[in-house]
Image (cartoon, rainbow, N blue to C red; front, side):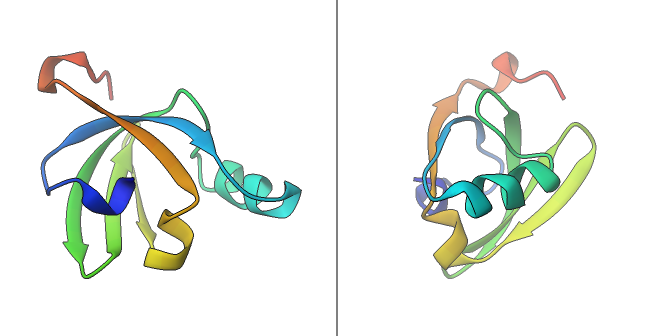
Length: 78
């Protein structure tokens, strides 16, 4: 889960869980399956991620909808 990664960690979105509206919401933020990111900050369960130069703040309730895979630092191409 996204909220279990530490700041500085790199990952890839594997799946967006939720209904059609939830998937559209994430796509509007540039977050979709296959998207690589870097976790910049966290406060509680809320996180800030960067993907392709865009920073997105994601609340804990929303972050729980994302299945992620942790990547080695050299694997991410932002």
